[in-house]
Image 1: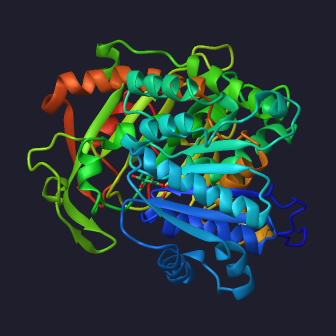
Image 2: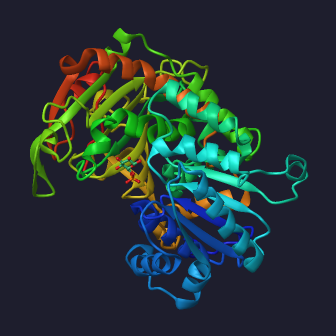
Length: 513
Ligand code: BG6
């Protein structure tokens, strides 16, 4: 076994000032600032760094700094080193203001000018839109009109002069039309290479490793196609309920919340063609292209190839769970799905006739995110007492969370005088080999943006290709309403209709939990 290593050869990111819109929110406290701390602890945050928080709530720079310092120990996942803390919060400003008001941008500009003078951040600015989605387009417009995000195109083309970048949180649109409109608005103000649309799934080491598994090993690619693969299952199961997010969730549902973003990131990494280079445009073009090859179903096909369901009462990890409809801020007659399963087909030479089954849901038996690739069975029953249909199935399982591992399941001979076969597995676990540094999952994404590497950020075409696939399901679900809504018990593995979706093809889901 190779020695454990957490060593990094990366350089600190470019000097810059980070402006967070939505600074008083959960995301800032729980994930973003702890990620900055973790970057600083790893020596990856630039020495010259400043942080400007923008939010509506009344506060001051001192109070904002104190607030962040107070919440940090809880979320950084490690003891706080005061020197590192000083590096992150040594230069903090708070701007109270309405993000739709010109004067807010004047104040931000003043703070930026001050910090840029004091800290020599070279004019590099990163704007992080951690607000509710209604804020994205107006903030983008104000950043454009105020000139705060303006770059000198000629300088940037020559890789000189200050950069100005904008990270946009999810959800990026609520359907194809709104995602397209948002892209258009932003691209009217900023260049594509200034826009970083974040999907936190791409910050997960195990998700990033899918490309390494496929393209750094000669072993898998030759069998990564319809000749050898029977089908693919992508599961993002959560034991969490909707909890306090009723307001957002009831108008969103499992399909919009998870599929065009997180599940499609997984799907495109699994199904994409090898890029010509490991560079942002090459990778993003292949990811978008495979999504463009997903068959767009008719309404009838969408209904036939999907299951939507809502959780009823039950028990998750021994805790009683109320039905979704009793959740705070949820319509008691809501028909919003908390579970969705889809069967998708990809029309290209690699994947024709190989179904991709996707499922995601809340209040399920356990948290389990995995991609399972089922290889075709051995063609004949060579071993007398074990017919082909009783052989263990050959699965390559990429466990993303909570078990980050890669396992290969195959048949072996059970020791003894007769030939009996049993299913076994070979498993690589990340923590057997590598020491993982504490992480909120945002470190790599923020660092990449600060260094201008957009490989992990979907481009406009990738985002719209995802919505284009999901749109027929959105339309079909809207029109079908109650008729199409199944129920499942909280704490179960999902509705029986989802089992039937696979059973009808002679297949079955892998167990959850
Ligand atoms: C978010 C969704 O984007 O992802 C949540 O809005 C979901 O509903 C979460 O719970 C899942 O993320 P993770 O990293 O816990 O799998």
